[in-house]
Image 1 (cartoon, chains in turn blue, purple, brown):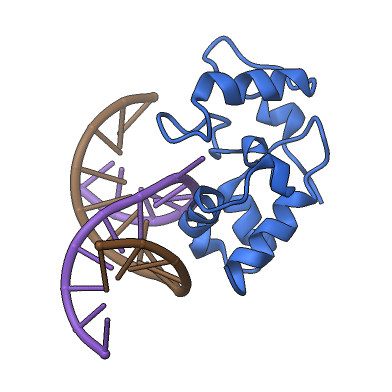
Image 2 (image 1 turned 30 degrees about the vertical axis):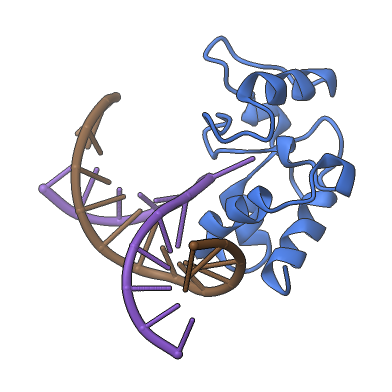
Length: 103
DNA sequence: TTCCTGACTTTAC
DNA sequence: AGTAAAGCCAGGA
């Protein structure tokens, strides 16, 4: 929960609504592109959306959601993202080309 | 304290 | 283009 985790939460917390970011991208923003795995691991231990960590806005680099490991199921995650105005492709993937977070 | 595992990504075949 | 393997580092047992 210290250092990297906290930093990861802080960054994920800065993801604007209606926007998604990939694990690797977040890791890169933190200055550690190799810790991409840990970004996801941090989400696993994240306090949740109520804690200010919108883990549902964090998806794969391909725009795909975490299969089977989502906070409340991939379906719920997709529903939340759609509720934020994020468009999904027919493949069930997020339109990263349009909603990928940049900053 | 040591060993194992893990919401990923990238490179290589 | 698709599949396979390696690498990263910190938390949990």
